[in-house]
Image (cartoon, rainbow over all chains, first blue to last red; front, side, top):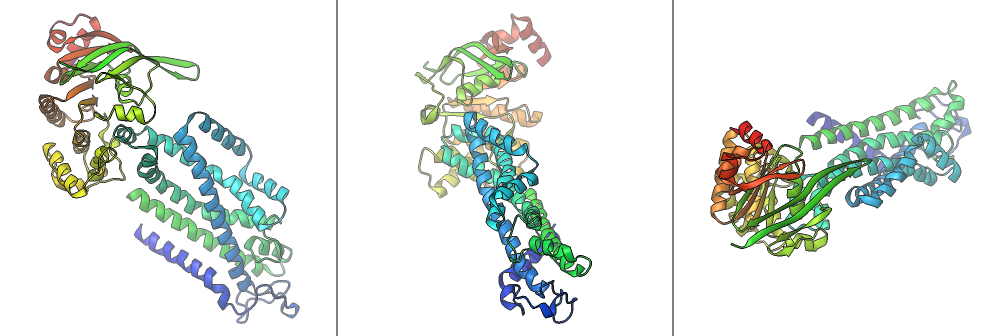
Length: 264
Length: 250
């Protein structure tokens, strides 16, 4: 357990450092085209090769990673805040508030989540901000459902009843009982969702519903590269490897946190 | 003797979709200060619902409860304030303590909402209360998951008593415990009774009431089947159901 935590934490730290300060150290401008260097195979000059416009793939991976990971973090955080807030309201207040929020959740759940995200992003138009809105509209449901059921469960627990009998007000019950009770599960869900959201953003961008070209974003880069899959497989290949390594890193980190929290 | 509790015609029906279950039907009783009353019955007889209504966790459909001469309400801060001198001990000791707090913090919760607590002084007070329950002060820094079921129940009782309640509702508090711990808890409740605390002791085991309770109320399907002095009921039960409970117990 400790080993997994150390490895995944180190990996996440490496990714964070690479994405935060990497763009300042890369040799080439990820957006600068140079037709004379188009479709260069991986070499010492361009370790991941170049694309159809001669742009350095490695530099675009670093720049694209920033867009993909930070957008994913924004989606997960916004979804978590909205979902947890509504879930807590539904679970704690019950009655009509719970009914309304549960009905909204049911409506959103009636659609396959990625199809709904595609539809919303399609209606709003191609833009990374719209992709964030579309994915938030899909991901908040998980948090709301989870928070609602956890709060309902904690509220029914005897220690909350005992606290009420001891004179605890709603704020104290929320702060001392509900919040510590749900935070572990919520953090785990949040960490495990990051990987899946990165893939969803890449998916939307790949379909032309996320980042606008020529923005360096992994999905956009792969979408551009699919036309040259046979001619320059390294474009999709290195992007795919980067995507895989980052997603696996966040998933491992999420699982390590899950183990840690469940062990407490 | 002053009446600490007076319950008049309590009714409660639980409704779920098209089904409805009458949990408590026309329940009435009185309790004197310092008295120990046992409510006995099988699972589903409505005894815990009665306890929940008194404690304010469940709202009665009709009927009234007078605690220390005042009618109890079920909503808002007033409901809590009225029950300030009331405490409840639950069946499952491990779910009765906040798992995210140490035993000391759990004990502090019993008083912190009504009075300013000096941490150092309260630590000593909490240690003394635990000591009475046979637990050393070391337990104050432990989390509930580090305690056994019996130790948790003792810590729960300590939490219930640290605020000096006048009425203690014990809802099947010995059911989840082994016989030795059961005996210890009963012995401690007897000591408490001597100190003047009124105890409402809810159990399905009628034999436990013989040691502790002054009077017994026997419940079946939400209704009172029989009530009276413990000795009388145990020796000369009138209803077949009580006779069955007594014969099953001995």
